[in-house]
Amino acid sequence: MDPWLSPRNSEGKDGATLTFEDNFEPSDRLPDSVAYLSALEKRLAQLKERQSKKDLVQSLEEKHKSCMLRLVSEGSNMTFTQEDFDLDVPVNSGHPAQAWLRRVAPERQAVTVGELVELLKADQLTQILSDEANNSDSASKGIGRELAIEFSRAFAVNSVVVLLARSESGLAETRNLVINANANVKVKIYPTDLSKSDPELFLSMIQTSLRESGCSAGDFDLSLIVHNAGSVGDVSEGTSDMCDPEKWQQYFSLNLFSVACLNSQFLKVFPEGSAKQRTIVNVTSLCAIKPFKSMGYYCTGKASREMFFRVLAEENPTIDVLNYAPGPVDTDMVSEVISSTGDADIKSMFVNLKKTGTILTVDQTTRKIMEVLESGKFESGQHVDYYDE
View 1 (cartoon, rainbow, N blue to C red):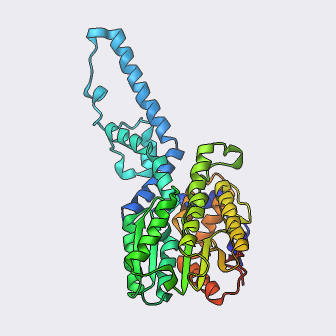
View 2 (view 1 turned 180 degrees about the horizontal axis):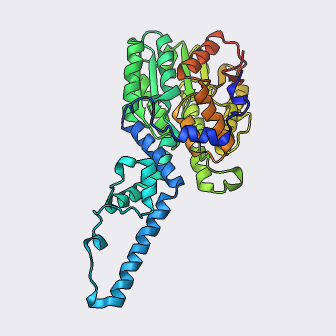
View 3 (view 1 turned 180 degrees about the vertical axis):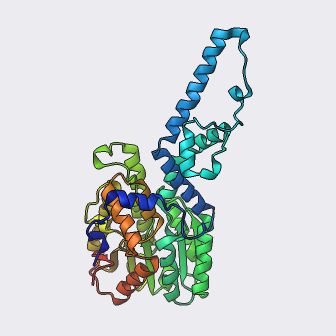
């Protein structure tokens, strides 16, 4: 049974929400600074929802006004205490942030005003960190990393594997894992911001990889490209609020424009008659064919991207094109939806998937896509879901 279509959690919205928010601490250790920043961003987002920023600004503003009024009214007779201008004194129990501290970080109840100001500054970084954490970093982690490893495991001696993602450290780690899986392949990594379409750069990376590996396009039995990079978009907005052209542009730059551009350059290097078999895999989603509330950007992006590859399949009958929907997989993207969605039903659905253990692992969905490709029993351009027989 497809858990995406299962009945809503019988415990109700409130129960699901409390279950998630009261269990923020991850079950695994954060492996690196990137994961730490992702976790920090989510914590800051939760603080923002509780309006700590607003309360703190109001408190500091009131303190400033009070001090100025005393200065005007008392003039030279005015006396100050250290607390009036020292940011390093503990916050007293009446401070608006004190209740917030008791709930979020009881061990920090003796926090100073200066530290609270620094927290405020950090809170202003939330959107920047969110933009970074929102991007699924293709070959550096999650589904992308597992696909790179498992495909490479099946590749022949002297195969060339080219990995693109934003995180250089993540790519380096993936390269090591690929080599551990198959020491007979050559791995090239390129830290790349895939939200920026650069045809010349994309072409250069592919050509350079072949040249440095001492081979040409005609030397391969199989040329394969997997389009996995993408982002979920702003799930806090409903479609009636999605009116920012710049935000639309940024979303489609990563999720459609650069994908089409990279794919075009790949086909220039591997035209018809080069490799014996050419295969293109687009990692799509159920959201490409079924609407989900609060996921307007994601659904629209996935639908557009999938249709692009369906058209490509129609135009190029000698290319095998697979639109693969991996199902609900336990990745950072799911965590982002849970923490940021503006719809309680969507949040409850994903929380319930994690709570009941019916959410898929990257291993499960990777095994499925390998089976589909090995069997060859799919129509080029077809949408194939993890749950399809």
